[in-house]
Length: 443
Ligand code: PA5
Image 1: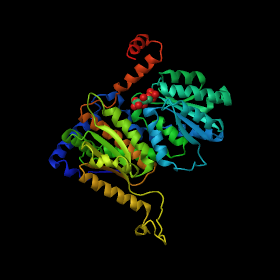
Image 2: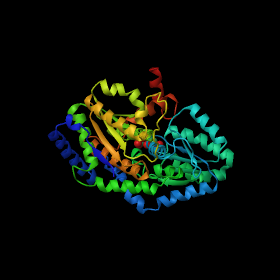
Image 3: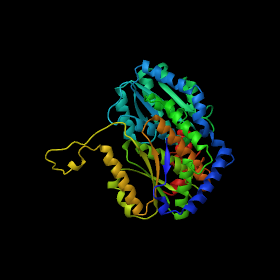
Image 4: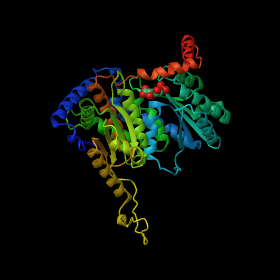
């Protein structure tokens, strides 16, 4: 079961101060639970694990995957950006073999999360030789990046398989009624899955936004939902031992009390790189507003100990770390003795690679605490669907509690509109004529 440890934080935050933040966290938790806080029309994510387990959504997703299996699909292009992409990417990267494609499920690739022309050309190079399906995901149904990618993939699928078959190969995940993607899906006869109105993009990994691509990749989303449901129950407890309360209380004690403005989410497992990306979006878009908010960063250790490690140890003292630790690896590898011992590593003979990794983790913790970097630890037992489900729900719930402590509405994202307005003006989108004139004067 996921647990939160406050490693050496008592070297930095007095116990009485921490207890004050626990009280604040319990108060904002009550507001979140009662649904009386800012953005309370976006709280559907709180009950997603229990409600989805009772629904037929898993069967519906399974029917799509079965159909594609019958059709021999071996490449699924998942199109989406931000909250419509990062949850699935995070889960699939965490669960899949790092090098070998499984033979009982299609390869999953992502598009629409950037506007790289070379990226899309190379993706089409791959698609040409494969049996292709597509999941296009957009809550608003109007986001430019996925819409551009979808236009390209749709044309490719229609040309390769014909329009009738394209409608079996394309599935849309979008709003139940609004947006261009919904209208297009109705017109073209695509199977659609609904993103509930009351679930925002970055809180949507446990809706079809995350569940369908994760299932298409061959993973057990029921187990993921069961892990999330366990965390839903635990997070409901009004206790200072509730892991979400502990995490929200300590990160705010470090930020508001000590001026630690940057939180670095770290891991010692390369499979967790995209957990950092998912978490950065969740916390960055939820808390970074009104001139406030902890800046969320991420590092992958031990890799980044050889780059960012220097700054963390010795740079400006405005950082704290949140370590996501995994107790047990899924596989085993022992370091063997070498007769010549030219590398001098025979002292490691008989030890598992993971023992070295654990000691790197412990050594880093002690060094960083000595260097003035407090560390919170979010510990899970192993990296599988259930524990990922726990992590997703835990971080979402703690985000709500934490943002409310700062007096912020965690469920809107007014700041992401600014670049879009400029981009549309620069691209002469109809309706942006005045903005186009204004922006050109600045160039
Ligand atoms: O969290 C959010 O709301 C955003 O990151 C969105 O998920 C992202 O902008 C994509 O939006 P949409 O799903 O409407 O295409």
